[in-house]
Length: 298
Image 1 (cartoon, rainbow, N blue to C red):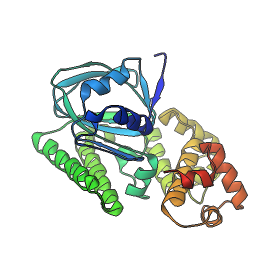
Image 2: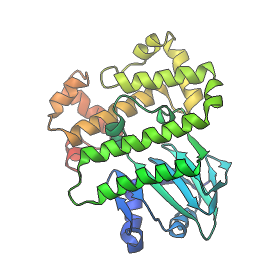
Image 3: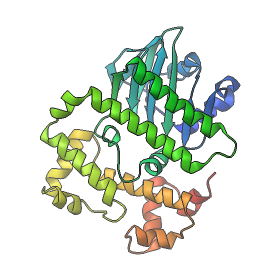
Image 4: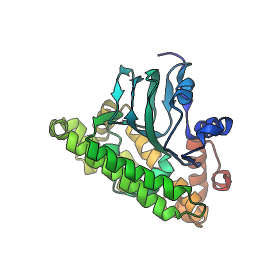
């Protein structure tokens, strides 16, 4: 596929700003999109110039009609009753959509995901899957739809509680994880040793990344050499082990900067950096922003 373009939450916001009809029955913030009745054909138009890289994870539930996208280079067909997950940096291109297509969707930033799930990441979302789709029973579809609607109703209130929002997102994610596990028992039993080790690595990163920055720590916990662990993680996930650690650290740093009153020096100390200057340089190298400018962004 040629001509890949990024499709981020900020670009979704720009799309909403240009089309008033997208704002009806949909919620949008800097870190969260909840779409109850998106204009499918209008959104499809964003894909007409080729495949897009999704910068944040997406969960879509088809309620009516069908669509035939190409997901991570694989042609797919999703119909009413299908739940579709696309992970961070997943690639999607929509080629066909039925005229009667209807869907609901949710997307959120890594920062919000981290706040919602904490250190205990649902297995379906730990990074070992680039995408998946499952066929829901009518009862499962109805339950997922109700959870999604409740999240939309709550966030649409003018003075809604951020903590309740996080708990509702967490509940939705854990329910999707529950559904995935029910539908994927056979696949899970057939995981290779490498896939199991990768999952163990991700859980360790989620738990220890704010304090442990080096590959050697994780390799020792897994009883592997750093070199072999790096090779294994790259083969299973397509992303380097050090990048997984860096991504987890940056997400935690963003959460602390945006959602606490801690000083940069306090955050640097809590995250086991030698000094605040080292932390600030690390943050800017990975995000392109200073800690001060990130904290001041709206």
